[in-house]
Amino acid sequence: MFDTLSNRLKAVTDRLRGRGRLSEDNIADAVRDVRRALLEADVALPVIRDFIARVRERALGAEVARSLNPGQVFIRILHAELAETLGGAGGGFELRHQPPVVILLAGLQGAGKTTTAAKLARFLQRRDRARVLLASLDTRRPAAMEQLEQLAARAGAAFCAASPTQAPAQIARQALDEARRLQAGVVILDTAGRSRLDAELLAELRALHAECRPQECLFVVDSMAGQDAVNVARSFGEAVPLTGVVLTKADGDARGGAALSVKAVTGAPILFLGTGEDLDGLEAFHPERMASRILGMGDVLSLVEQVEQQVDRDKAEKLSRKLRRGKGFDLEDLREQLQQMLGLGGLEGLLDKLPLPGGVDPRQLAQQVDERGIRRQIALIDSMTPQERRFPKIINGGRKRRIAAGAGLAVPDLNRLLKQHAQMQKMMKKLSKGGLRKALGGMSGRRGR
Image 1 (cartoon, rainbow, N blue to C red):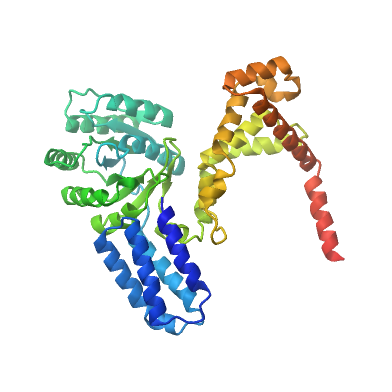
Image 2: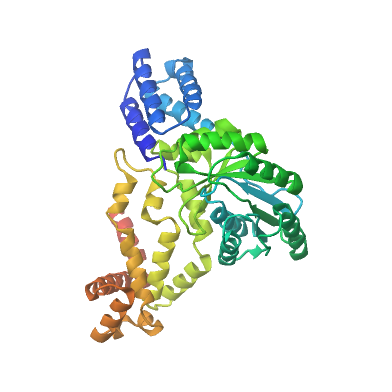
């Protein structure tokens, strides 16, 4: 999301990093470059003015003058001010209310509210083991209720069925009654959007807020909306008391201006980032960690948390026991590993959270390993019978032609997959027989000489 801004700011910090001292001229040049980078990212002008003023004041102050490494101090100032602009040290998203906790989603049509509702349900079920009920208050958009019902089923959440002829406030009351009956701890209400901001939408939203009295009122905004998002956010914030913001489509080719502007305009912290259509594509937003990612410092802590949440520990332990018993690493195991990589946002999503050397673009690095190739490999394995996945050696010429055709690919594609799997299987077998322990023992022995 912050590719352009990140590249420009990293260029500024790279020029400063080796400086033994900073003069007013050096600082003026750096601040000018930072301002240009923020303008290119489509950050709101009032936000840029405040940000630059704070950075300049701190950079010209005593904390830089007294430092042995002024360049590093300037980078630290930039990091601190970015984090503050993105939201500061917020309290995060906690369900510390009397159940059922009501979460109202607001935003324009096309911002991704309905998908976000299902993603949030999945997130809360995993993180808090909460029982979640979803309800659609969108009586205008065709099939809006059916869409949310299908997404609720995929997320494993309950759904409150209603009719488009009912009033939104009536559906909201019905959803709360249903939640109490099912003993659901959280109710997520998906409101209607509009293709543009109008008085009718805001009046309906105010009425719903008064009726439901939600503990959380989240503004859902497309991160690619730029300056338009700021104007919309201001209008929604004036209509109802927003408690947080969800930035959707954060994996798109966005400049990041909405993220840096929306907190200053609404006063509500960014709580979540949404990526893709997969229901696992929602992550908690941490301003300090995002500031680190923008400046190329990585975000290893978020990566670890993501792995802990999304990797199935039972399956991982099952594979470990299987390998310890000397059983082979079959194609079903390979498929599981490939699926987990995609679930973590693919290679680009992983690299984006790692501190890479200066000048290394995670997007370009990820392109060297074609993510579509991973999906093609999964398609080939899906085209096999369970027996073929467990015993790849039985895959002869006729089976190869059938499997490749079933995946819409060619036999050479399947041959490459089988060769890759055979190499991985050989490596896994070596590790299961103590190969890793022997290798490490040999290394320690050589160090002792």
